[in-house]
Image 1 (tube, rainbow, N blue to C red):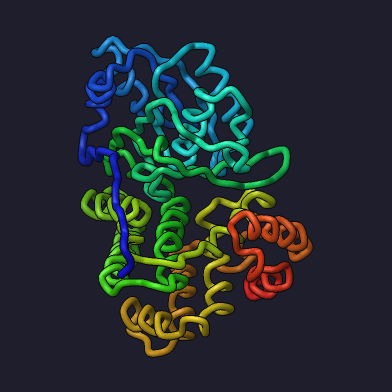
Image 2 (image 1 turned 135 degrees about the horizontal axis):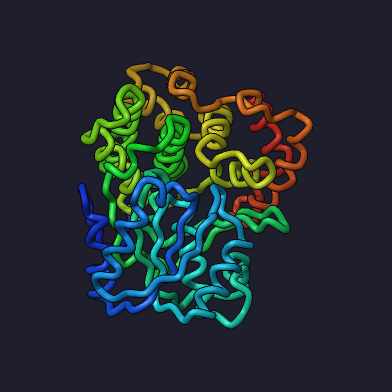
Length: 382
């Protein structure tokens, strides 16, 4: 195990009806006006919006709305949010939605206190030293953004899907009421399962140092996600399964699974960012296409860990059998494992490969993941 410093300042408020407390949490930070961000009008139809507004009003907190944030969130909407936050002089951001809404909110929070172009942060031209306080009510368990300091946004002009990370981007308070997630569609449930598993396997398979304790934690998260996904497909209103799924998603990317590790890389996310930037595939769906293909290409570089994965997760003996079992499980729950499953034509691949090669340089992996290697990987998903 490597030396490490672990710090996560986000307060998690977990359980039923906890969204009703958001006004109190904002008031505890002396917030007077928020930019209220969300995605679709679903939160207004199901009553969540009204619940939030009532809680804000109880503590005399004003709000400015910014709706319409989409999956694979766009820089153009971030710009809109930054302009609104500055114009209305808000003193915090309140995200009500899934990871796309929260990631956009983090970028807005940083951009509001910056005189330049917020995209500078994504390009590494400037570094985030401050941001407006961020609060959220999470309505989709997938990205783990509710308890980490990262965000991913797509530049809709250049088709670059890049990330930012900074201590200032940790949410102050994240509210997770699993019951709010019971209306998530089956499609986005299974895409979320894929996303959580991808967060787990990146370090699990690529780390040069990976403590046994961390491997066991990751295996527990993956098996929990698999078990609860199947239960939720059968019964979307199973609260206990929804709660375990939600907490597993948070724990997969809140820093716990990287403690004491070294040499971690993110090739699956690097490639998938190109796929979703070019084809607008939901992130989790793109990952379930990329993961088995990458695993088939990579497994001999860490075959012992792949055998462990096969044995622990699926009761299989070989690396190849483990990869096949994961692929079959993705097929079973209905998330795509081949380009054809999502009607992506082979003629689209050159644009994806070019984009991914740029991502590889951005991720610091350009020497390994050349266009030729990325092509070899993606052909395994045809």
